[in-house]
Image (cartoon, rainbow, N blue to C red; front, top):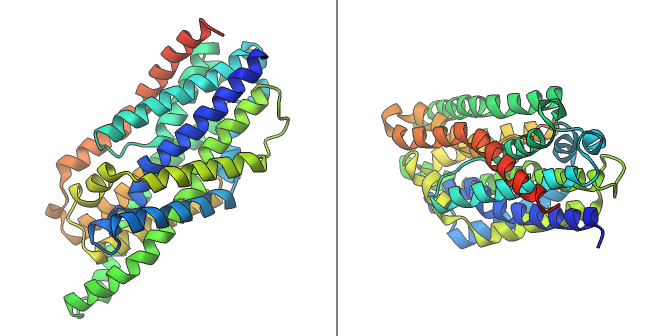
Length: 338
């Protein structure tokens, strides 16, 4: 078999594996609040999230196109580093991202699949061709989205919870909780849909990048089979569930009541879907966790478990550089064989 074709097939396989892992790794965040308040049973929440993720993933392609061309230029990738090396770069990036996702999932830490994938692509490309290979305007735009979206989500969660406190201050607590618990079914579905519109796009973009680097595709349009396969992989991964991360996000940041869950879901879904509409990849993990922290701060500052919050933030900070270094190391190993 032709070497480029073999590497491209491996990239497609590992990209779908990454999306599958992303399904049970990151989607747990989308349903964590509804599970923790018992608005939904875990199995029901997971299956609902799987369906909504699939629908969201197959509906939009803007983020996938951004990932295809904004980190490195796929049409000049091989001109920098040779006919097969461009594909090896992408394969190394995927292996690095999968490794980091599995490590953080094992320890129940809600790290960012977006950060690890973007850091891995950049690290492998730099290892192969130096810093000039990066598309700096696009890369900086993605970094800005990843940095500012959690801040906006924190502010959004704070404002949403503050609004709820004013609107429902005179209502019976039991009735309010019961109503918000019912409302959480809808907000969890919305959250899962928006997650699909953004997170599943990343594997689509990486597969398309590999197809272009391998000379098998000649535009940044996302083939339908790529859209369907990535959406299906994420949906199947979601159906497996990510109960360790549900436990962390749903209870270890703060004690979540139904009103808190609805406020956090609405704030984070707005940020994620807004980013999708302007074709920017964001970390759904960061956005959802930050909105919960914002809600907790508005509700009662001391109610937020800042020790766990610090642990999550530390993981956010270290994910991209660690992924870049791992991807570079994996690239050097793969380059011995291809």
